[in-house]
Amino acid sequence: MKQHVINALSLDEIKQLFDSFAKDPNDKDNAYAWIQKIGSISIGKISKLNEFKTDDLIEARFFNDILEIHIFEYDGELRYIQTEKEEKDKQLSSFPPDLQKQLNGYGGSYFEETQVLRNRFGKNITLRHYLGYDEDGLACIKATALCGWKE
Image (cartoon, rainbow, N blue to C red; front, side):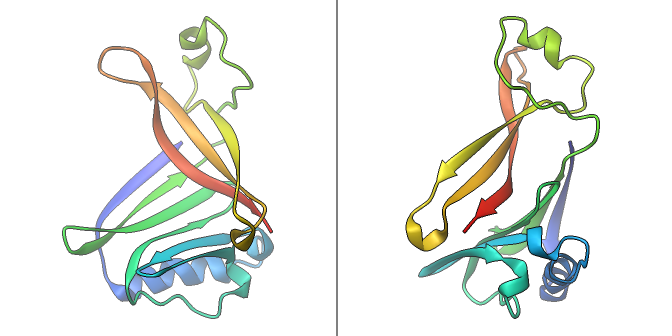
């Protein structure tokens, strides 16, 4: 897993991020947006959104099965975190007693969780939880990214 944190974004930079997802001809049908504004939440295929407006934005997530861009407000500024799945990442199907041994040597072991949504938001959404270790050496979830959605 690669993760980048950007401290401040201009409105033009946010629109560029949205446009890069919306206009990718290789993945336009598998790219999604989850947008939370004051008074509304929407989720769906990016290809069905005409444009992305930042009026009253609380947070937004643009995602596909490899990349998530999470935009949020912090201290009066818009910021974003980009989380990208890498080829060396390993999906865990269970949690064996030797989890620490299994995690060693991988860029970011993860597991995926599918959550059922209310009908108005679609059928379900898939989250990818990346595992790591805390300061005491205990396994923990170090990052979570959206990675799939079904109507």
